Image (cartoon, rainbow, N blue to C red; front, top):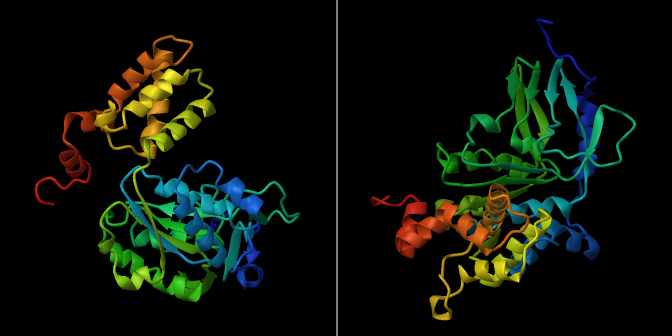
Length: 343
């Protein structure tokens, strides 16, 4: 127990893992994705037709992309749909190397398929969608020993094998984001990475599609890193009709009862002042959040049906809408992007 405190299912031998995993990722791209699969995966994505085309091309060719745009335009949501375009993959839950146990399976990112192999040491998962944000550090990009579990826990780079690795909120990490991206150069180039187990080097598979995302200026990423994610998607603010459609879908998904006047009032928030609207800047995040707040307000008010009065209260309680109503559009942008004071 002192030498190896791991207690659990038997790990897969390293050589077996390396051979079987290599056979799965070799020649993985380009893919032929059936139209029915594409339609199902992107069914709930409203608008952004050009972005969908780039997403599909990325999934077919296995090329990474840079996705950028204002907060709330659906960058993470859209990227997550790639997982449904890629084929599933078989991974071991744990592997053993030189007496040490390495954990590969992470239920937070690996979603099990309905059909599973007879050997319980292996698990068939849908293509992984692994994402990190402003909390990312160089330490988290390494494989580190967890003394409580008695295993080496792998990094997002390894967990994303066979799927997508999204580096979200680039430029907002405590460490220099270019240092973080530098750490990914070898895994991206070689489709393999080297980790160290008790000082011994171990080669692992890292066949993933990199996605870099930010709502800051695209120039924060240098050319060397953009070459490894050579495609790009720019997401702009949705139209009033598009945000109303997403708002309606959220209400329907939550089983809310409402009428057309609610949708018309919500649309009025975003249409131009020349047409009698408030001309606020729409984001898809508004549609989701306002729908959820409106449901809470309706329940709080002990009403059976969501009406315009409930919607008005929900709009008043949404912080970003309240800020847009209070400040000019230019000042609002500076406040949200934390650029006040010359930053």
